[in-house]
Length: 103
Image 1: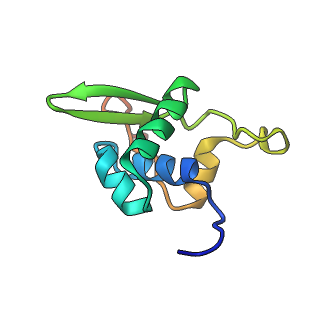
Image 2: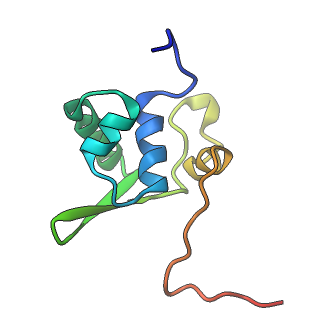
C-alpha cells in the first residue's frame, strides 16, 4: 500500500458508486482496501450530505450521485462532483425520460 494517495477514501467510494450504481458496500471495501464498516460510514457521510441517494431495488440498493453538488473544500467549491468524476472517466447516464436531441 502506498504511503499516500491523491484521492481520499470518500472520493474513491464516490467514484465506484458513480461507475457502478448497484455496487455493494462489501465490493467497495474489497476494491479500495478498507473495511466494510469504514465503507458504510463513508456512504452514510455522502448520503447525509446529499452527495448520493439510495433506493432499494429488491434485496439490493441502487445509488445515485448528484453531480451538481460542489466539492467540499472552500478553494474548490466552484467545481462540482460531476466535474471531478468526469475527469476520472465517469460518464453520466441518460435518464429514461431524457430525449436524445438529433441535429
